[in-house]
Image 1 (cartoon, chains in turn brown, cyan):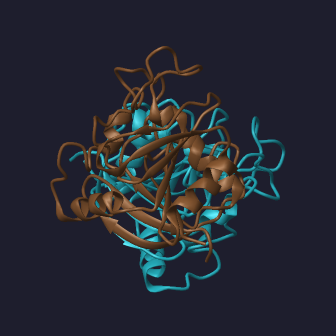
Image 2 (cartoon, each protein chain N blue to C red):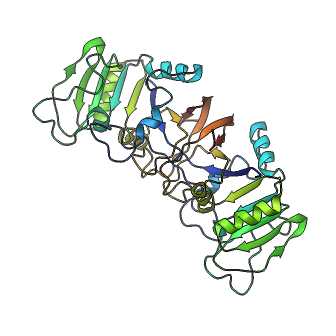
Length: 200
Length: 200
């Protein structure tokens, strides 16, 4: 089995997006502050190295609907093609979790968005597409939480941002017996980057 | 003004104690796991050094009632003398926040518990007692939260334990605009120790 990873920028109170997500503010109120360490261009070597790791090639991604698109419910007349322009930074198959089936969308640069109606099926198809390469759960909170619940995540990098959001989306909601082991720590003034193993 | 610090062991979802605190389980369900890095005796050099820092001499402490005692409400017939035996690890005046005044309790080793009915008054008396030495808010969640709200905390060490508690006591509840700067990071397999400044 290939390795399954995830990564999330997270507040000190455990939120990966603020409340009131909208098309104008897709990360919710205050959510952008979680990403100060890499938004625009990272300004120090640690944040640069972590950004490169996140952008490194993968075999496939699994992504939640709420990360893929601003709207909820049916896809509507004009199919949303993601937040990332014509050439998204994934460069491999991305399996988007949704209750609403849709045809795949082939983007530039090797990214194809596939729309899949269940977490297990998405993981299965991601494994198949990835071969020996790493499968990464790209987020958001709910997709990563489903990964923990299914026990498929081997490693997660949490980019702990030194901010408090007060409320928002938690990848841990409903999980009470999650015990991780930090295996790498890289510190910058904007985030403490910790890679946790779920296996050791 | 002397420096004001605080330190809290905290879960990945931002809780410093689990739910259902009782006399038998003062840290709530799962709460003891936050303290694995120093409970008993610390087992590695980083955790040892952090434990020593926490135990270093202070000028005075401010402590919440819920950290001091298992019960709530009136003190009852027999006054509670803390969780820490005859010689508590504070060795200086400790100002306990409570709605119920009580006479001071002099313990062995220089610790005296004073009972004070307001956060501002507790800080004032702690400053007076501490002179030039550091004042530390010992916890729990509510006392530290009041410290943030009052803007008196200069530095907080969060010992990030790699566990998820699901619910419990949060020092950040109700705070939405707290922005910190990590100024030190020390990693062990049991916790990622980060000292944050509120000033820079």
